[in-house]
Length: 157
Image (cartoon, rainbow, N blue to C red; front, side, top):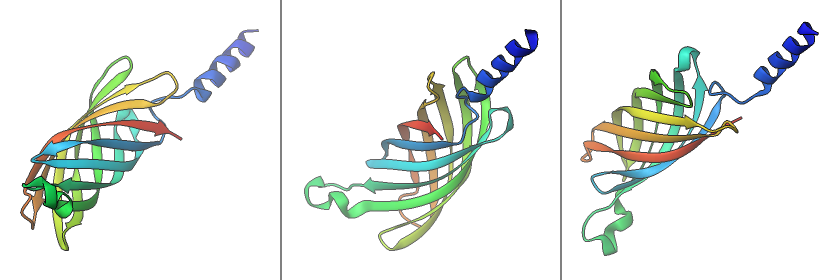
């Protein structure tokens, strides 16, 4: 009887959703100065709550007057971010994000470095809510510094 209970408990533990699943990430938010941002990515878990994420994003840095030049400052980029776990809570986790980016804006290529923090809260079904504080330092074009907040979800698969 003890063996059967042990097997059932192990089966539930293996089949239940956890924070160590591969995830599709969807985020959107506002970056300073005057930038809207949307991001899609793939997060691969590592040991001890650390992870690696590969992502692509698009954004729009609008200029003033907004009426005729709103879509003139668009950009796209992609990157790889290592996420180091700082604190683990009962249903959440705080991570430090760091990694390189590359992309283009108005036919000009750029390189950048991203650093920031990410807080994730795990729901019972395995989905996660994420709040990302993002800081970018861009090289080779005029939009040198970008920082702000992104809200999003992570969907396990």
